[in-house]
Structures are given as structure tokens and as C-alpha cells.
Image 1 (spheres, rainbow, N blue to C red):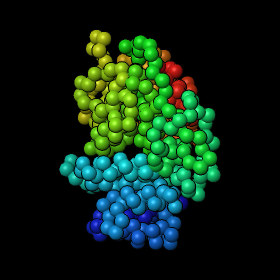
Image 2: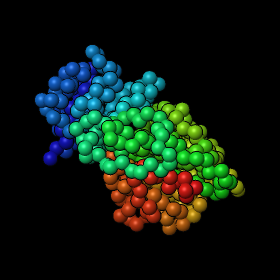
Image 3: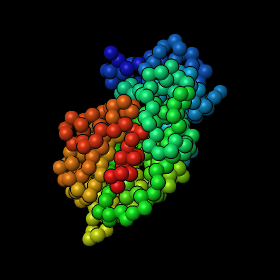
Image 4: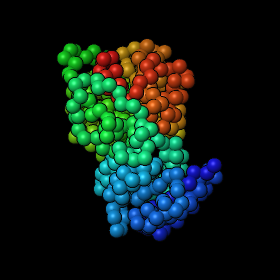
Length: 375
């Protein structure tokens, strides 16, 4: 059965291009297009699409306002198709926090139409499998049961976003736990935490990182995200977290209290020189169809950190990182996979579990405490 897609963009040319490119995939049917939110609302009711592609610069109502309204009244998977600009990156981050499941940049300098089309098709396919729902949405009753609070129940920050796995605050739900206490003990200089995620991962990562104290071991993250958007994502997390969060640069030191996010369209590799751990950022080939690739990071963590590493694989489509997580476990590392109930797309964790590379399968609510205890 085809994935039914509605394309929303104010440009007639852009709508036509997206329609043509998506229709090249035999498993996708573009059931309609819309030039503004009012037309989109009418077509959503009339056509019942499975996935929406949404530009954020729209007439009559801006795309972000429309997205938030959509998630309150008619939750559905939304892929943002955004201009690769500073403003576009900022709006895309807000869209992800508001419930969109993924982003694809429009073609521009260094990013061709063919690359955009391939990425859009992959992300529409992933979005069609995503479980979404707002706090007041029709799927609320089916959302996973709230987990017991890990520490004294007091909200750290208001929950934003409509993805069920990450936004579990609503009527009848317990507030999200506050940040975990400092470790207050020396962190082994060998200890490194490596985390990989894809569809739904931005919300899951925000949930986890905002609950970790500033004295955690160094954390390296690969989140499947286009070039230009990872910097905005890292900056947003840095504003919210006690930890220092930055987009990784070549030769950055891997230090306690620091989170390094792999830049879009680059591979990130853990290296060691003497007692110093650092990251190599390179323009290597795609691995598991991804760049950055979780597999690349995990394999390097297995080799460089061995039994001193912690690995976590979160929500996402595909198998990126599964073999790498097995390599980490075989090297003596402790490994964690997000469970099916709290994943937006239970793909990457499922594949890692199937290979036997996972020590702990945990609900998203429990992963911050698990990392805290194992640190």
C-alpha cells in the first residue's frame, strides 16, 4: 500500500518539484498539494494523507503556527522541507520541538536536487512509520503509561513537541523528572558515552541531556540531520542543558561535561593520542547510507575506549549503528537500546537488539538514570 503524501509549499515550482521527485518512488503517492495552511487543512480533511511535507515560510499563517495547531487537533507525521539558512535552521529546530519528525533542506549551495530527493524519500518513508500524537490529540489514550519518577517529581522545563515518546506531560501524566544530581565523584578519564539516533531522536536527546548533571563523562552524539542544522540543534541543547553542548569540530578534545554533536554531512571518529581523547571530523563516505553515521562513531568507540565506553542507540529507522553496538559490547562496553514503547520509530534499536549487541533495553524515561548510574 502506497504512502499517501500531501505537499505544502507556497511556491508552485517547489510543489511541482517535490511532487515529481516523490512520485519517482513506487511506494509513495502524492495525493495533493497546497499553497497555504488554509488549503492544507481542507486537503488533510478531504484526502487523509499519511505524511505531510511542510515548508515553514507560508502565507496567511506561518508554517510553525500551522504545525502547532495541526499537532493539537490532527496529529500526523510531518517532514519539514526548509531553506538552508540561519533563520531556516532556527525555525526547523522549533518545528522539531513542536512535533515534526524530521527535516530536509531545500537544494542550495553544495546540496543538489538529487540529494534532496533521495533524502526526502527516505525521511517520508521513516515518517510513515512514526507514532505521533499531541497531549490533547486523539492518540493520547493510547500513549505509553507514564513511568515512575526517577527523582523528586518536579518539572525541569515545560515539555514541548508532540512526539509521544518525548512529550509525556499532559492530562493525567506525571510531570517530567527534574535534573539528576551531580555525580560528585571523579570520572574516569577513559569513560566515554556514545549515542546514536535518527527519526524522533532530537526530542529523545533533549529529554535525556536536560536531565544529566554537568559532571557527566564526555558524550559523543550522532543524530541523523542535514548539514547546517546540526549547529542550530547543538546550540539549542546548550541553552537547555547543564552540560556544554557544541557541534563538533576537527580535533575537539573529548572532555567531562562536554557533549559533541557530529556535524551534518561529516563523519565523526573517536581518536586517542596518549591520554588525550579527541574527535576526527572527516569527509568520508556514507556508511549505512548515512553521513554522519552512528556505525562510524560506535566502531571507533569500540576500538579506542573499549570496556570504558557506554553506548546508547535511540529511536530511528534502519540499521545504522547495530553492528557498531555489537562491536562495542564485544569490546567490553555497556550498551543500551531504547525500547519499542517509547520509540517514534523502532528500527535502529530493534536491529541492535536482534544482533545481540544490547545489554539493557530501556524506556526513554529510564535512560537518563541508567546513564547516570553507569557513568
